[in-house]
Image (cartoon, rainbow, N blue to C red; front, side, top):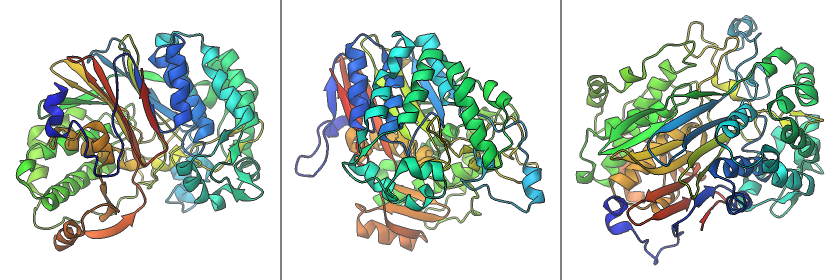
Length: 536
């Protein structure tokens, strides 16, 4: 089945710079940081399962990639507990405070929620998700999963290359809050490659969560420390907001693409957008297109998907949209018919905030439990606001709300914002064949569609598909990575694309494909991060 996907590109071209796929038979994992991957491997070899490994890896990433993830963020998970296509999804996104109102912002003539505003800080949902996930499917004792993170928070992790690059871009942001600057700046400067970063107060928080579970974060001294900090910057959050935070199991959404099935978390995540993009691409014969026509079509399909996201996606509890309606063939036929292969279509500018930062990891253990796991602070270093005693850096996911009266995604009390972080899985013929995620903020839905298209339509193996140069139509400007052919770019310009070239690496990604016929697991980790796929 896997060979059917890869065809001639099962093995990479060794005349070009690149990375090889990782293959093994027992267990596989991949993350955006080698130390996190090493910790996950240790957990699996010590008898833990995929859930245990994923949680342990993610807690370590809170120190290894503190600008990308943390206990102060949100988390989404997809899991197959028996290695089948019977997939469950976990929504670990926190809600706005019980006092949050867009009308209050409108009265102050505030139309855009910025990262440092207390309104941008929704209650972190990640710990609630970790706790529920482990309670139902973990194997090792909960407190043991935090041992590596506690050690690294106390002793530090040396800053890796991509982390150093991202850190250097955020010195100004990190200097705005005194508690943040004390922790995340070194003598007023950003941490650099090979510097040792530690967060000793976060180690105390981890110890409390390890001992007390959910209550250790959402009640007691940690919650009080977070609330005090939020109040100090004008927040209207309450202790009840923290204590009422829950993660919940939700039914995944899915659709077919050329005989394969892509599974995503439902709204309030943007996984629906990836399904829309692929459903539009499926209406065209991509193999007969030039590379320029394919890139153009992909961009036009992506713009349709993101337009629908901005118009309709929101917390499903407060906006009863029909997912099936958006995947209706007749509706998508109408949208696909609007695509002009000779020129771009200009859409009204999106007010959705651009942001490139998150972590994604995936694990498959010896018993077939497979997990697709994503955790994020939204922006680099989230809100830039830190609770001093606990060392918790708050995310700013509330930026994804808007202030438009009556809009489905309007900021209101106890509401989840539209989310960009989306783990995914792939099945074929009723069998699970893959788990993957593509990082990069709002790029993620486009990234899912793009990477899968490279595999299914053009036969690239996982590592080649993740390596492949990326494009993203970002508010009618086409972001193109450095490796794109200049002739192709010129053809896109002739179609009317406004090019932003070159751009820094777009996102990142990890993938595990499952070849049951050969009893092989194939892992890949994107070159754009410091990551590592590894197995045994």
